Length: 363
Image 1 (cartoon, one colour):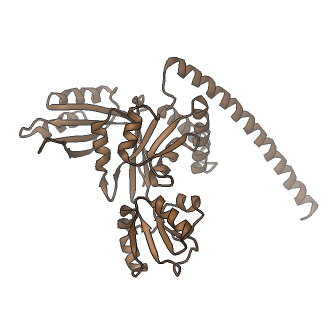
Image 2 (cartoon, one colour; image 1 turned 180 degrees about the horizontal axis):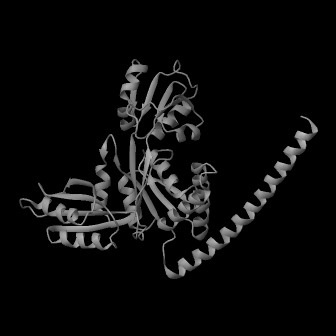
Image 3 (cartoon, helix red, strand yellow; image 1 turned 45 degrees about the vertical axis):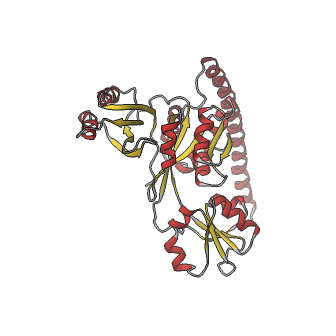
């Protein structure tokens, strides 16, 4: 390297060092301001999590950036800054359908950042119970998958427990085949959760038709087995491969591209309006002809978009059904409030499950 080039690099690197020092100083100031905000929230008994404000901050930053800095990277950076500042106000405990490295864990980290304390739960019901009893601040559970459909246990939890939906997040579900060697010639068994095996059935039959497949309770457990037995391969997430120091034999072996799971964020109080919200309801209709039509018409008349309706049998009451309903808008919006009050008269039961900022569906 000639002297001129060396001096040019040195000058640019010195400038980067100076900018980094400025960034650290500004981050420290931001951190101190976040602590002060947390103290005010505590005195006012307001929730630490404010999804609307956090979305607003990210949106403002991306707008000011004008795509000069890679937007995805900037989103990740500031999401973690927000996570650390939120945690400084009060450390949050997040329950999720475990174990660690599952897709629900990945969804929880994507929504809250890495700062909170994440607590794996053995099943979906346990997540609901821990949130209802306020032993955790928030819970994360899957509600529906674009291939497998609605998760019945989550619908049951929304029926049985007093919680509020605080948010939603969509996560692409991509399965990797992982083992210790990164090669197929060492694989004698393939382990994974039944859903993952079902979603990769065609790939397995085409590429490894003679290798026995076994079901285990989670993709994470499959990865743990692969980490201690070189003859085992697991179908699991990329996070599981990194966590258990495994090699990827094949990426994205799911049979259908675009497989996505929607997760719900469970809490104790609803979120304030953001201008781009969703409201979830649980209701039961009168057993009369046209009941469902009379439910939907007042919503349609007001231009309210119905994004999901799912029936679920009522326990111990044969042939009676509860309906889980998602509509666009916040319960504080006049037309949404009027629409809900109008349909209430035709319901034998109606419960508002929460209003929250809409998640960004995966394209």
